[in-house]
Image (cartoon, rainbow, N blue to C red; front, side):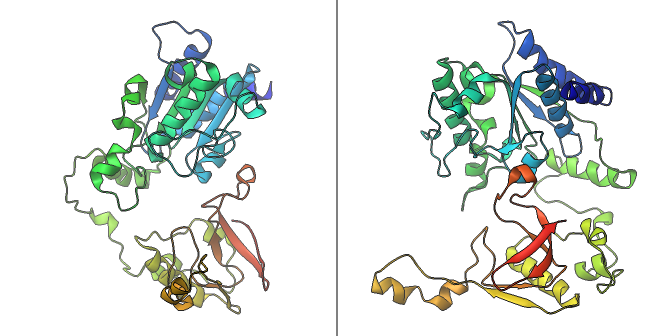
Length: 364
């Protein structure tokens, strides 16, 4: 009853485009006819409340006593979904290393397989970020479990996201390779019924001009070279001064820092800015140093890859060799520790205490 009440409350708030998407999928679940699609894609720019559509659909299905699976391509996106998990987790067990013939590491006749078989709908957010090989692996898994040769084993599946934003990340990949890695460029895409959201439900009046400009760029209407509009140039060019000039770090509260962040193009630049902000904060700085060595017994490798060289490297998804922190500093998780509790890759935390081998922090 609680799930159905949430669904009813959401339906009263959604706009016509969102309502169409919800009922289109529900119709396919409960009143399916042979000419109806089973694969759906919810396309909408940032701010069109795609997540609200997913939540309404999930509550509606679960309110009828049925199972609905919700996953996302990132941990942060998964925390916004009711019962959300990352797609690579125990739901599908997608392998981390993928190719065109990869298969999921999930066995038939297991409790995990039964969850997939019993599910009335699968909702997958941030789908454009996921390599098409992951979808092909899930397609093979569901076909194998259901013994049905239809796309995704005949399951009702709703993908969603925005192809104007981040596409699959291909290491040293060209633009054409990145685009070809999207599900939109694969034959599977022809099986999807696309539903569009266009009304921005989140932008404040002061942000609508910026949101409109972003959409203009995302639609490819600005050409190869983009001229930033005047409102993108702040009066104060120093980002640290612009963002923190009104803050007294001696008395600052977590709430004052909560809505402030600086985006950079490279990790090196972000570390420079972080260290500058850290210098402004009171308290004693604690430095944690990594212990780096190579997994090899070959003496030549030991000579070729010295400890000093390894210390100079900062691979993606890893902290720097020297991690400088103070109590009150903002840090970010780099691993999915407990997605169900909101502790996943990208979660921001506030440092409470710095011990010799332990960093005590709480959610921001």
